[in-house]
Length: 303
Image (cartoon, rainbow, N blue to C red):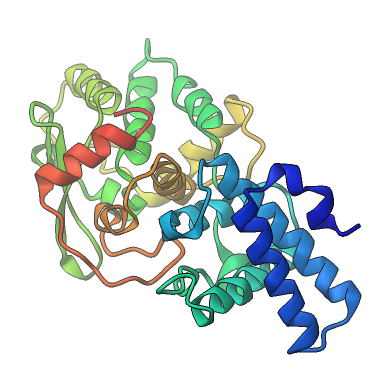
């Protein structure tokens, strides 16, 4: 009995049928060995169980973002990079087969990351780890208020650390819940900010007794540096018991990943990040600020 047959009760019939047809094509058309076909079978059955758990019963409703979420979970499962690359290769082969057979119109894996990029993607925190990190600063102190506001803002917006340290007081509108930042190539964008980050920033600013224009200051009253933010993030992560190697970019990537897992549109997230790649290099698509705010409020766990 094959792996697929053993798991037939756990997969929708249409998934099982398409998988078996693909495996047959590997044997007949490509002449692959039994061991190789069994590896394809295990990898693809795992993927199809994931889709089934997400409520999908056919390939017509599959979205690219669901594949990206799946690949992200593979990486966070502790699987070796080479294993993740192999599983993604199996996905490519399977979905290209479905396109050739006319089952789906377009290949949803066309924008999945390459093997090299899969190995380079930064780590991602779980929502629970983020919550512990954000709760770590002691807000009864001035330093704690500042660190709390910085961490909340990094996770709420997905800002690059260079964008964060460049913020002025006037760049964040606490009443409207938006922040204006200058990204790469001097491109300005407006990003929605969730309630917890707004309140943390409001509390921090209320504690300030200076008139310096910079939003975040270092311990000596000068504009905070990228290195200082990096050290703060690491120190607060250790205090929160986060074992993952972490940097400010970890919060940026966690922001994007958690939005994707919540169901947000990938192109909207790319705009929120300022033309950045999450795991793709898709073309920029304009979404209005109001729509971005709606998406952010719907999908971000701390909006």
